[in-house]
Image 1 (cartoon, rainbow, N blue to C red):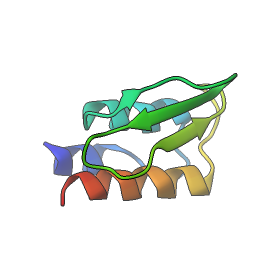
Image 2 (image 1 turned 90 degrees about the vertical axis):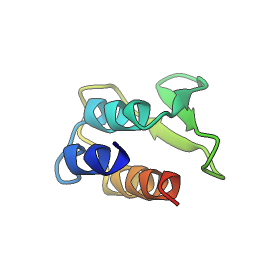
Image 3 (image 1 turned 90 degrees about the horizontal axis):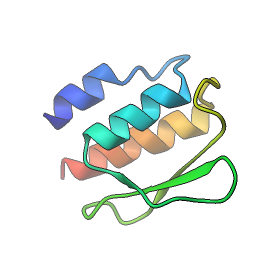
Image 4 (image 1 turned 60 degrees about the vertical axis):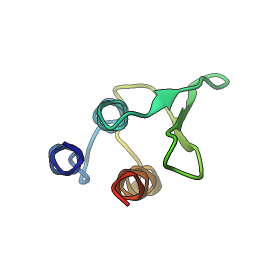
Length: 76
């Protein structure tokens, strides 16, 4: 299922909504944050993934990289 999640999350010119959907599908939980920041945690991932911005905003390169790394870490 996780490989399917990696395949469905578009890592080029994606929206924050798509990244968040991919994290939630992989079992990440939003533990909240201040303002438009969201912190996602997973039992198998050592560091929380922080996503900032409105849902319809374009994802920044570093956000896509952080999500991709976290999703790969869940497969180990």
